[in-house]
Length: 328
Image (cartoon, rainbow, N blue to C red; front, side, top):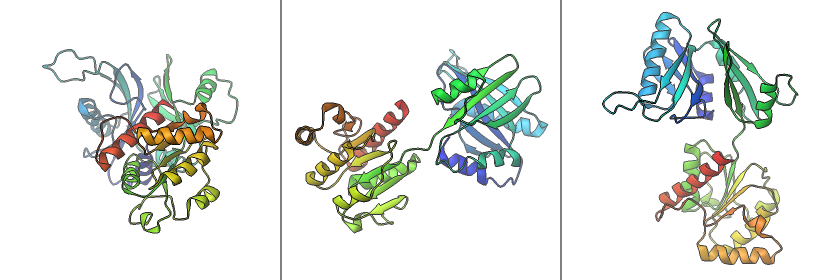
């Protein structure tokens, strides 16, 4: 669940009736597979998206009808259309979307999730017999007698199950990692802007104070302009965090790489050429690191899109980060 959407759900002011639409189940190829949610007001305004296109248009219409008729429903939407002359998705899959009035009670439930500093889980159940929807938090630190719930906790992935009487959506959300950017130059600044766009928190570190100002990095959780040695002594990096090394010189890069590789951080991006990385990696091996350590380093960092300009390089870097996080 996106932090921005969760914030909007919690802060919604209920100026008019509004429906909550949730993708409860998907099969095959569909626009989104992360079980998205969306609010639809009686006047047709929306908050969030469940994938766009004709499906979202149909869901909005269904939500407005449900509000007007005071209904709760679970509707199927088909993307297996083969006729190019007709409306309907061509992706090849199907989704089931629940539609229900969004109430203060549901808002209070989401309010308990707004501080995403720890892993949280819950179940949304659509009872097919009573045509009702309920939500319950799951204690992920306990052993559960229900094998479905226990498996869900162990796998740590959102998933949907269906029985004769109910469709259940198990949601599992973890705090996003922090991207620590070392170097506030052109690339660091551009990456910081894109990170905010995808709701990835950052810290920024450079020994030049003018390169880490609030004006330059308005959304950074932390800014420091100490020398590299001080950075390494004071900064706490969690094992789930990411690091981008984009300093102005190879001496700083080398020291930072030695320090980062001593941690268990899973993703280290280095802004470099092939030649520079070859020389740095040779030096790291001489320092006692092994090839397995260097496998955590993405250098030259980013997806190869033949980027040349700073914005293009930032896009390639962020593409690599997104790919890593989705696979992880």
